Length: 556
Image 1: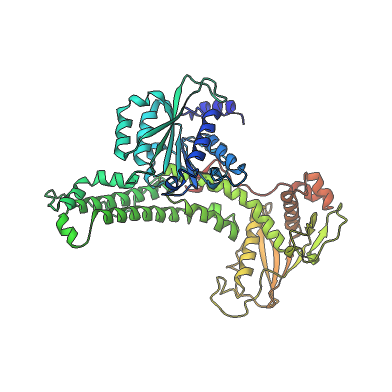
Image 2: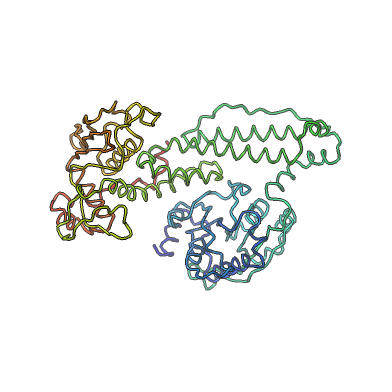
């Protein structure tokens, strides 16, 4: 979609929060300055805290800046030490507009929505960039300067920032100075022109003594720290407030969890605040010093946030239920790696949208993986147009042999996915008596069937105990009659093999979607011709897609 159509859509949806994309001229200057700062002269101090590996764009819009930096890094060539953009592999964004979030590249992870709800202290990206809304540039700049945990911050703000006492105080609070990279205007913007003259500022935090968290901690507990340093008693004692551990019922799951989380956060803060008012001399006797309290508080807050994100992830079965074992692990690993996102209702929905987009990406790749686990010379048939021989051992020579344009038969014998467990170990599928590989493969097969519209009527865990050579049928509910039909009949053997007999319509759908995803089948008509079955045409592009537009429905 063009930038002009995007702006129109934003206005119609009431989401035009002063969206003026950063100009290419400013982005070019930003990229050159990052290269300069990461060059041989500056690299040591530039990467001292976090390493040059990530960038956060606050008010990221459609991700234009992050996408440009990603592209520039991918196009770097040679071993020039000053060219370090390729080291940036993690791209984070804070953006309020759902429309703009939907326009971002899939490589960008939205870690926050409403800027004013975010705590930047725990967002440890190597670089932070922001082109804030001009009507609020001072408020944004002050918050970013005071709270940023990045080594370097870049701001695109009006020239009049130089007269701002609030910004000057924020810079003084962190003990940093600004460097003007350049002066620019938006009159000739390729996206959206405006009468705005701006500076691109670089603020280097690498020489500061304290992190943002340390600065905030010292400001919050100044009396506490002063008491330890002077070894005098703090005479003011306030009663401890206990917010309790009762969960606060909200209108839906996100509100419910966030209310409980906020209550726990407030309780922790009050406990640490109460500790700050105890006698410093007494606390020192027990080895309790400000830096230890600070470290403990940060660890406690991070741990609490991690706990609640984990709790949420365990509940999004509407997403994870559409994923195979491997896809689910990949998605949850990425989600778990980004638990520094503040636990707010708006952020929950932003993360769910990201999960939905990535889950849909996995749905195709996992079908290919499960399908190709079953491929063997004896299990395949050639497309009508394919006259080439199928080569044995192809799975072990993928770089040398490129078998293509084939389909699976309805009867399959697998040699690589396990079978009856030889010993009674504590398997995941212990009560079933089959190996983990066999159990996971069958579970993944049922998941793929569900994404193709064949909803299983039972799980592998519900299949009961397996006996060598004895058949077990897995069913699906007919979408028209609702009656149960056999999806696949499976026999497991002690030699590690599985014998499978598939429902013919399901196997046809599987063959069609695999061919489409591999690029072998371009149209419904081609699917019918190559697979020699007119019923293949309506199955083309039939894989289920999770609805990205309504994440609320998943967490009601």
